Amino acid sequence: MKKKAKILTLVLAAALLVVGGAGCTGGEETQEQFKIGIIQYNSHVALDTAREGFVAALQENGYVEEQNISIDYQNAQGDQSNMTTISDRFVSNNVDLVLAIATPAAQMVAGKTAEIPILATAITDFAEARLVESNEAPGGNVSGTTDMNPIKEQIDLLVKLAPEAKTVGVLYTSNEDNSILQAAMAKEAIEALGMTYVEATVSTSNEVQQAAQSIVSQCDAIYIPTDNVFASAMPVVFGVTAESKTPVICGESGMVYSGGLATLGINYYDLGYQTGLMAIKIFKGEAEPATMPIESATRFDFAINGTVAEDIGIEIPADLQKYVIIPEE
Amino acid sequence: MLQIILGAVSQGLLWAVMTIGVYITYRILDIADLSVEGTITMGAAIAAYSIYSGVDPYQATILAMLGGMLAGLVTGILHTKLQIPALLSGILTMIALYSVNLRIMGKANLSLLRMDTVFTFFQNFGLSRNNAVIVMGLLCVAVLVCLLYWFFGTEIGCAIRATGNNPQMVRAQGINTNTMIILGLVISNGLVAASGALIAQSQSFADIQMGIGSIVIGLASVIIGEVLFGKRNFFNCLVSLVLGAITYRVIIAVVLKMGMPANDLKLFTAITVAVALALPVFKTYLRPLKKSLKMKEDLQDVNSEGNI
Image (tube, rainbow over all chains, first blue to last red; front, top):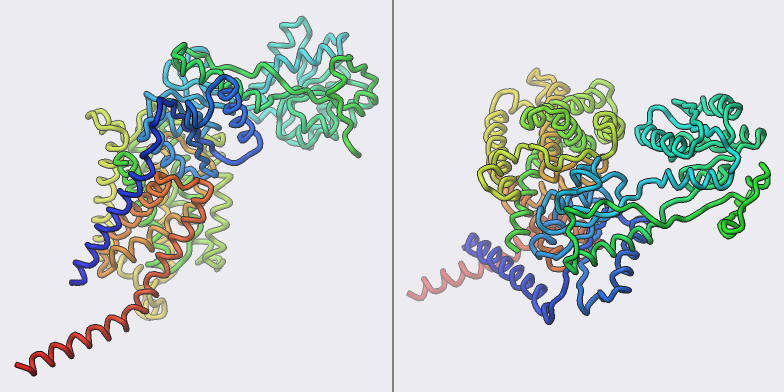
């Protein structure tokens, strides 16, 4: 008798679930809609704004939510086991396109489907994350936009602010893969502009002082990529460069606040917007991920430290004046 | 719907391996071992890095298991030899493993997309990804349940079980309880790491953050399994654990499918676990009620018999 009751409850529960599930899926397909699934790894300003940019791009180009597209936005809140379920949900709902925000989200969906087009954003290197065969020709169902630090553009900024520079010194940490990669790219960009490249590396923050002192005598301007050691040791670098009046261009705005001269960086809203435009191409059938090269940002945000500029006697060009910030003491 | 359920079942089977590991410490040894959050990532890290460097996926999974056992050994030594409270020993191992895991992978995220995994073998037979995971998961779980059932029936296995129940009595029998606790932690963390290795291969990447919250999932699965599927004997317990892990995943999947915002999911998880934990108490409230009903029935029976 007890067993029967137990079975009955289980059956009833199962029936409820099925009915409930059916109730939720029905009643949506009134007209032909593009179904978009957005899977976001975590709540985070950069990731949130990238998503907003994506939705804005669709909206401004006539793809309005609840009219001709439906957006199923799911945030895994950093819990990777949830991402599996979210990916399964997208695959079983057979969405027309998935937007994956951040690397783990993209990897999860890419592992689940080889058919549904996936656009990903806020990913540094698609090839390194094995999401695509190569960044130029993805070859699968994944494409998107990278948030790789715009090193070439940062070196261009350096030339603009210090036009008479002949030799550029690069400071970085020799045991950070990310820094080594960026230094190599910086070298390429510097030499392409006909300047000389010199470098000084450190392995811990204790060596920053010596490294900075050794390099200021050899160069006219300094470039520092995004680097964890230098990010925290910028005041030390500034102590040396303020004396020698050497301009320092950095990899990210945080370093500009703590003593760098200027940077330009990714704007995640624009990056998301750019991803949205790629999605529209896919909707219109003009392109498919396999042949869409990974795009990098085309618009950047400047940050120029007004106090530092004054200290080392750099004239900020008129068109960059509006980006000057005066950090509070 | 079916695909989501299948996906959940496949995940549940992989998490079941971890659930059994958690059960060994939490129920058998009566220790809350938090090193699990580190060892699950460690298993994933070792497996991902090994596969990345060209090691056969099966060997990589076994390597991961050995790594987890080593981590369990560390927790065990901290707890028994250095007499650090169990909770703290677990936490120490967990935070230490964060750095170790970063060292193993060399970076925070290691992708396994388009690489051979333990599931590739079944996918080559034309099975879909989820089905391949289910077949492999079933195989692992079946072997594991049989092995553990045998092991905990041996002399050493019984000693481990007894250690959790009544350490004084066990010591009186001339058994070293410290050795038994270490052994239990080693087995438990080995299983958790193996589970991490399988999960990483099924989700096609290992990530430094993937262990966060895993202990809650493990405990929830243990409790859901015990409450819903019983714990009459040891074999029944092991099967319940597997079913519990699957049920947990299915509940989450169904709730997500029905459109609960993912942001509310953690709250829902907490409520589910709380309800599962409280079920035995509800049952005790129900028992007197049932008894009185039964008495009434019996009385009626007696009355009707008396009438004849």
